[in-house]
Image 1: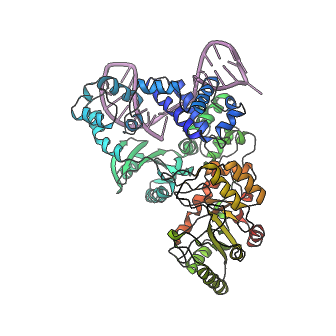
Image 2 (image 1 turned 45 degrees about the vertical axis):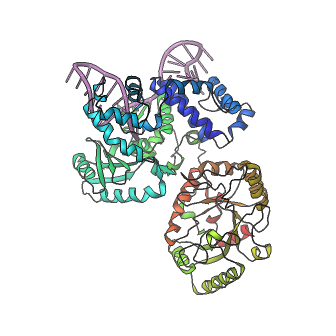
Image 3 (image 1 turned 120 degrees about the horizontal axis):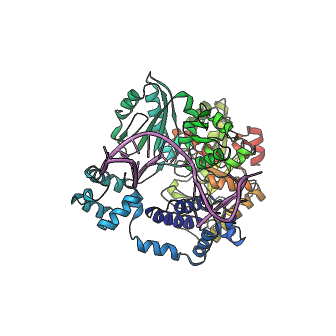
Length: 567
DNA sequence: GCCGTTTTCGGCCCGACTGTTTTCAGTCG
């Protein structure tokens, strides 16, 4: 898969064009980059079928450039741009307040190529002498430099969600506030989050802004106006607060939930209908046709309501026009967790604790799937321990009402594609979860074959965290996912959507692709501690972002039907 | 550079805030 490489180069070209103020060409490249990174199909395959130019935003010229990248691994046009502007654009752009125009200006006038150059010129007070830049800008650059160096960019949804909810609750306590909602990429449940957007309804904006900018966790106020303020928290996260009247809150929520790409699509639809869409509503001339609720806004544009998780301009707008949006799976549909760990291996909780928690979560069943076999790092169980655990589960199932504990196991798929336990043991299990725990990185072909082989084992029910990626830590294994999906369909093997905040594996795009192959999936937490059962909402969000419906997810089934599937 | 139910040219989403300016450009989302 060279999709990532292609989209990165297209983005870089857009960066360079942006400095030259070539706005429309910039947008064209950005759009093409977004199209490529959202693809769930290998771009080389699309190219082989001669369908590049059918992709949105990809025309004759960009198609030729993509072909050059695929054929030669690089792009002449891109190399030329790099030579013209030999600078660390991404780093410079990460400095709050510096944009493409200023970066170009600084490079041409002062030769600033990276953060060190920038710091030197700011300290020598060369920057404020440039036209259009002043003393305040120079000070701000120095202030923001250290932060830009430390800042790792986006953070995991699972880390940010709790904090955002706490802030929402604090603001909700104000009497003068009528409503508070979290918008932005958090509401879309994107796997990583760049900043937090909070929207409120109030008639006293000044007071709310005053409260917001003085909250205890605020480190620095970046901007403060009557309708919008931005702060940086002690932990480095940026938070925006915006204030609206009730009559426009729906359109504001649409606008600030994004994604930006979908908003642009919606605006185009508005224009086609002779209307105008902005954060204050849908307008015909001066008249506001809609704005109070999101449903109104979508309806005014002739669209069905689009769930936030779908708003990525990946076909949802067209589906909303034609009544073809999926009925997404919901958190309440989930009846159990099929991948958990206990103190029998590397987990921190007892089986009894997990079972009790599962009852509180309203589950019908929970599967205990501790590690086994040749996996010393995860303190795997030997055969004697497996027997011991099964006895304990039998006893607990007698003792505890309101939940069924399933006997499961997580086996390692060895280098020959075999589970590292004999079939005679697997046969005794209600559920076998199999996964590659590869520290080495085999080539695509052999790793794919290993997984395909494991799927053919009749006792293997679920392939856990299929791509092995860890967000911002480790890339996905090189896998031919199309073949994996095909085999999953052929053998009836389930694919996992792992809910750990740094895994979310399969990820949203993969889920969507797997659905094309009619695969069934299980949303599991892989919990190693009691509180991690709560990660389920992240996995469900990933399923929803991948357009999954209740029927696609097996752990929405009642126990009897689930057991039939697992047979 | 892309695109077309006003199609092969002339458009391309829109508003708030800031700083450096006297009317606006750049940045951000």
